[in-house]
Amino acid sequence: MKISVYDTYIKTTDDVVMHFDILVEESKTLEDVLAFGKDYLKSKSIINTELTTKQCQFCHIETASLELAELVLKNGYSIIEMENC
Image 1: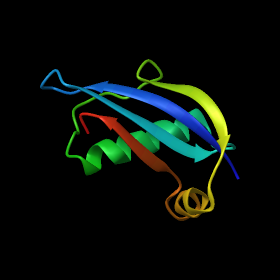
Image 2: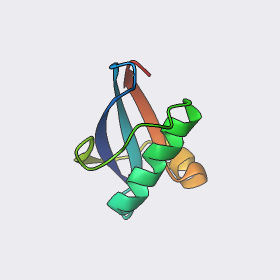
Image 3: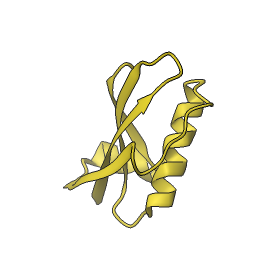
Image 4: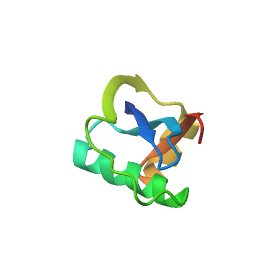
């Protein structure tokens, strides 16, 4: 399975910059990616932060490992937490 990676930087209300990657099937739209990102932020209790194409941009496509492919098929996406998550 091919996975699209979206590099995402969000400034929280505390002025902390969160950096995480959103991984989705290659066929997913940008609207899908932004919705997944908002779901992730909600799971972190960050609800008053806007997520747009300014904060979330396509980075690259890679071949998913079997474990990652199963996770993406099950949940629709996967998150790699990089900084301040």
